[in-house]
Amino acid sequence: MTARPCPICRRKSEEAHAPFCSRRCADVDLHRWLSGGYAIPGSEDGEGEEGGSSLPDRDRGTDGA
Ligand SMILES: [Zn+2]
Image (cartoon, rainbow, N blue to C red; front, top):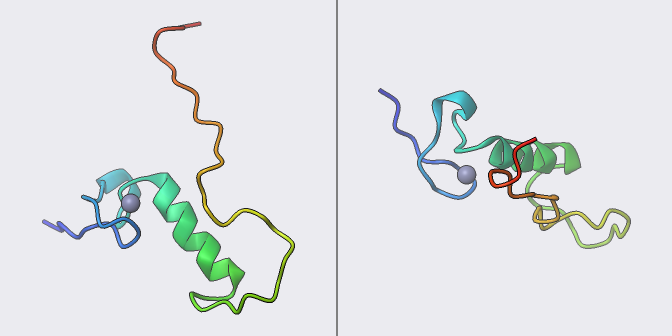
């Protein structure tokens, strides 16, 4: 059993997204890698997507199509 916590948010990782807890965290990690590593000097000002909380998370449930 591999009960490793998500390296991004330290939450319980899911099998479907291991070793992350969700695809979002996996995306975050991937993005960091593609961005050039974890230590990026604040000199590049182009992409304003660093928070990772700008996803149009719509609540689906009440409005079932
Ligand atoms: Zn996570």
